[in-house]
Image (cartoon, rainbow over all chains, first blue to last red):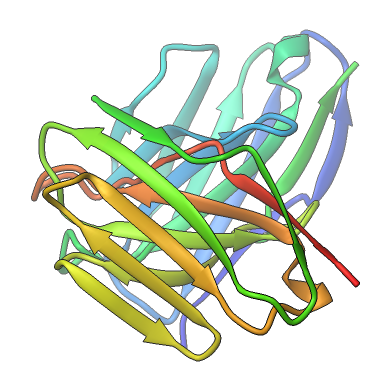
Length: 114
Length: 111
């Protein structure tokens, strides 16, 4: 069966510091990968999605970036965090073979920028 | 782009039935999804509709009308553990894989 894992689960970072959230998927090949963000009490906002290694599409201009160095690894980064980056970040995946497939989420990462 | 609307909050009684509505506007359509999200946790998949009609899965059912841009999630025999947010999400077009989410409906089940 397929599993998705992201880490760290929680982190507190000072303004201006860098960020790296990692996500890996097991039990599937060539998945579509996504990073979403959810502010408190709000809906999910798509940040990035990837259909293959090195292929990243950005949905919202911001100080975040994403990379996919391996088929089942997706990384969310920032060089300098802002207070407004505090949020719940969710990695997700779907089967790559069909565009209609369900998206499944990782456990999420709580980021607080202080 | 897409516009997805669902009520912000609903309250229902344990054992009852509740219907959560979702309306959407999109230039293309390739499926509607419902997710459940408990406070502080990640969303979990509940149902998927791509054709008109009702999909039933145990106590949960989801309905879709593409011509009306309308869906609902029906929860029967409500339990306290059903207190959660319910997210409606739409996939637009045939090539796009990502989902666009509504803001969610927070359901409170009371004894």
